[in-house]
Image (cartoon, rainbow, N blue to C red; front, side, top):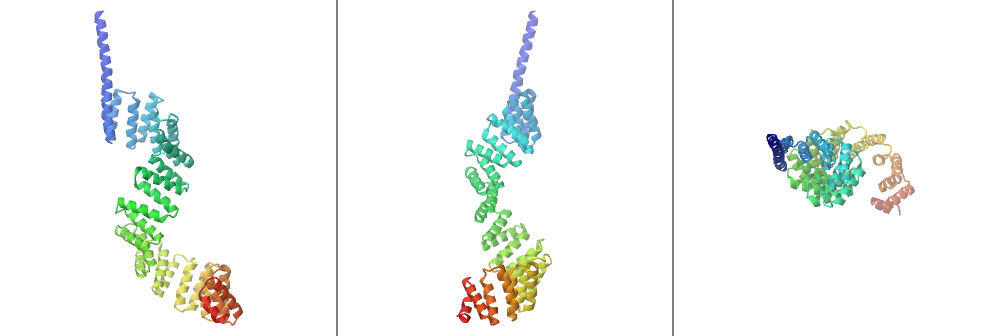
Length: 443
């Protein structure tokens, strides 16, 4: 009997020692895993958590910790499996829902993610993060109002939570609340400092409300981060063009070209910037280079044509506009510009032909009627000119030069009464040349 009792005692001791040893070994592996996790060595941490679980198969904490590591290496399916295992051991272990919610979000299982974080919120677990994650899931299924409410709840819990401000800014921008979005990005930056994503989103919002000076300031910040950020340099040049800082635009676009970035647009933008400061030769050179890179050749030919008019290369201007017409035959302005060039060449009959083509494309093009009227007047076809001026005035009765030139044509046909009426109207509309004519003919 004593032997049996002794054997039972020995067995019991071994069992107790086994469980104590098992617990110690499991904890040792778990501690080692935690150190690897904290050192961002997630794959090694997963291996050690797995060893720990061999000795402690029902540890909810180790399963969830391994799920975190799986999330951090992008293995979201295994993360969900570990969270589910933890929940099968203890269905009230809320932390499992939290990390499963993140994994579901990353797998685009947005409704499942919302359910997971809703559980966390109902149990008041990690509330500010849970609200924000749920807001992100809602945003991704276009529940924008609900997303904004969740981000606001996070901010109400912790007014220094930059992540919530950033995401609320994105949500507000998506429903065109750009001013509110900018305020949120500003707050996120105030709390967490400047980062590329927040700056990029803020400048997009500023661009949407035409705050181009603000956009440029944000690109300044991005370029401070990386002086060789070719995208930022190019875009800053583009927005400098928008605010008519043409010299600043040229500097940035030149640097973008040196970095071989977006060359076709950089040469084009630099070309039209040069044109805007009167550097037409440089403009033409840039625009002709851009022809080799851009599929939108028609707009380039258009701007080359304008530049060539300025340097008095009239034949070159006609050629450029004719090249434009190979791509688009329905732009009345181009026909009118060709007419203007022929008028400058004193070929008024040819000018009239092109003004007529402009009118055929757009029967409500007041300037084309006016220009045709001027050419007809120069050819002493004043009665025909008056008909064109009539049409121009019908389309735009607030343009003083239309009345002035009709008045001239009336006077040229000895109809001084009608001529002076038009001259007086032109004076009232602020057309200065009419004052001299009034003094000569209309006492």
